[in-house]
Length: 315
Image (cartoon, rainbow, N blue to C red; front, side, top):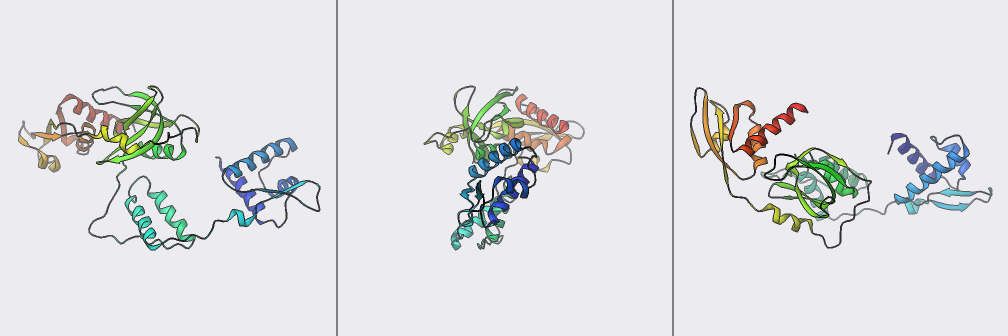
């Protein structure tokens, strides 16, 4: 929604909410800025605005003004205002904990905004004080914000996805049902339109940007679907794998600490064997050490590191 349209709708709500008697279309046109000059153009836009406000749950009452022959419009305050918000202490504690969990994640802004609105309405929502242990939800996967928005708005998405054991990513068009975290990894569950069946996608294997592929409200989640149960078969721990990585001498202490074998490998370098399970997570870990770490084998782990480095250079 454009800024101009948003301002016009907001002004229309304020105008209809604060009038003591119903306003005719002519009076609304004079009082609310942003409407066109022509009668037909104004009528079409005004009808669309009324429809959108009603879809948002804002009640517009149509009544007759004894001083005018034309119908009048107003928003009854008692039907528009929310009832008093009451939150029990245990509920407030849960809300505060949720905001604390999401503080460093992709939903941090939404969580803090929700608490701010509740406080403005008079609800006490004190956040628990930080102790020795603090829970955090990590959503550093670049695809998470767009997918979370698509699930919220019931909107199909398109993205390039690389399956395990394949180097090339293929485009998928998905009707998202939910985004789930399991054992530190994030998954999207939904209906794959190309394969015409339910599928689960790991967010770390999505390459490039997630694009919206349809309008909001066009995705319907089937009754009885449990996205958490859908993810379980995809989260079985694979067998441990071994990678050979060259480490620059005097660097990469984190990798050295995890190495099961470490030996010299030419001037200024050491050769380490590292055990891992997930190729993408391992590649992300190695990339953090930059030019001080070089994956020698296996080939898929090496390619995963190279792909991440190329992506960083092109961004």
